[in-house]
Length: 314
Image 1 (tube, one colour):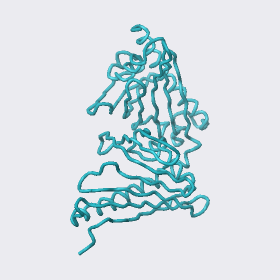
Image 2 (spheres, one colour; image 1 turned 30 degrees about the vertical axis):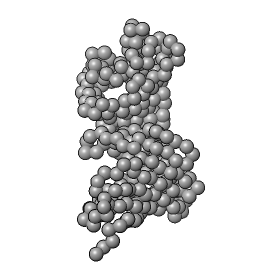
Image 3 (spheres, rainbow, N blue to C red; image 1 turned 90 degrees about the vertical axis):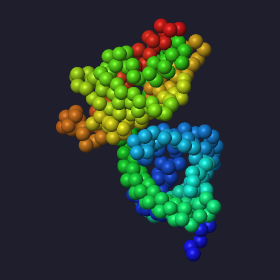
Image 4 (cartoon, rainbow, N blue to C red; image 1 turned 45 degrees about the vertical axis):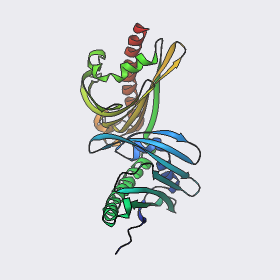
């Protein structure tokens, strides 16, 4: 009869990126929306130099979910340990380690180790977990390879920027204006139509038709995570042609009688579409300038109307 006690398994894959870069992309959770397509946002619950608790918001079968995990970081050995805080039956406990090993300056081996037990050490449950861990690990490593290689290659194409407006009002009123996106088609001239769903409080699906300066209309879809009345983080999953990545957040910081309201964007340029959109002679620099101008124009317009709204209520 096979052993039904604790199980330890290992999977691995080779990645065309330096080991230090791979470790950094996995260790720094702010990178996860770049390298894990389902990830919308990750926040630290607790953090010190070597350990952390993180809360993860991600999509599963088209729905946004969230959970909390604990991790230990070892940058010298390029290892990251993880442990589920609460395991769901038939899993009694589950944890593991990411191990990144340099094969040469530009290639790494990524090993994913798991240890787990089944509830009551039941053999049938353990076989079910074996199959699930094997299937998920192979899929996760394949996705990791693809997306880490893309993220590493696109580092020069990825940039961030932020716009801030100071408002003589309350953070709550400014937050409410941005949070109530279902009203944007009535409140914002550049928004033609909005569909906002929030089946789980704090997790939103936002689809929006936006008018560009040339009169064309672009449809985008985003997932948003809300933190009343201080922050709204989002990841755009239906993207305009010049972007392969767009994440960001709105923040609302009260300073006495005023609010600093900011809109932050992180973008990766889609080089394949530069010539088609901007002309044969256009460069990556031209695309960066065009995208930043378009996003800043819309952000500052939204913040300007939020300012009018909040100051009228002050």
